[in-house]
Image (cartoon, rainbow, N blue to C red; front, side, top):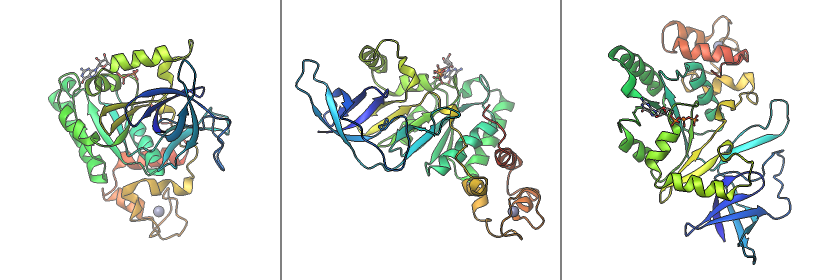
Length: 307
Ligand SMILES: Nc1nc2c(ncn2[C@@H]2O[C@H](COP(=O)(O)OP(=O)(O)OP(=O)(O)O)[C@@H](O)[C@H]2O)c(=O)[nH]1
Ligand SMILES: [Zn+2]
């Protein structure tokens, strides 16, 4: 049988077959991924082959992981050399941010965008809680949205509370597998509650499924919003590290810098203070936004701008 992994705890996996039936599965032996040290060989979003065991619980055994289109990883722990695969086979990431309560910094947004670029995953930015914005604040948010639109990131102003923009959000995710990310408190759970039918019940089911003592929300989890439309909830996404990204490569992950690369006076220009740097020139004449360059600068110097 074939199915998709909706939940992965490292001990067992929840696999949904093509008929929508959920199965609790384990791995047969050890499936090792070539050339990659991971703490979890199977991730949410993986397509797998499995068979059902002849036991009263009717549990399943995964025998094969089908090839992945892509996957997103982070270091399992700060010091560890092992990676943890957050999710696989993702069509796009939805970054949910808020201007207030809590405030999402532009540094955090840019760091997320750079990481997603490095995995070649398109990002859509949702500015939630627009109901809380005064006129002036709304103007400021729209300016930020315009900046990201210019760079190529589709941006939307929504309010989960007041049901503003939820229909168009549904069109964005329709028929796709989307990773939902954002700081704690921006409204991810509220949005999931709105677009996933019977989600409370599903979360309940899964908790009953889980071993006692394992907190269900510490793992990524996939939900089906409609046939073929999947959303992956990712707690801990804020730890998504840049550690893997080489300084030399950083500018490649800023779409507005890409066309200029290789055209600076010095072939190995880092775009920090070199004379004849086209990136710095573009910053000067306003073609590259100061906030975006600031993010580049601080990521280049490996400063922690996760807030
Ligand atoms: N004013 C306003 N409040 C909202 C909106 N959406 C969510 N909230 C509130 O924001 C708070 C946090 O929402 P959650 O959905 O729990 O946020 P979350 O991103 O899932 O947070 P974590 O579960 O901690 O990751 C709750 O009190 C929600 O009611 C909105 O559009 N407007
Ligand atoms: Zn340069």
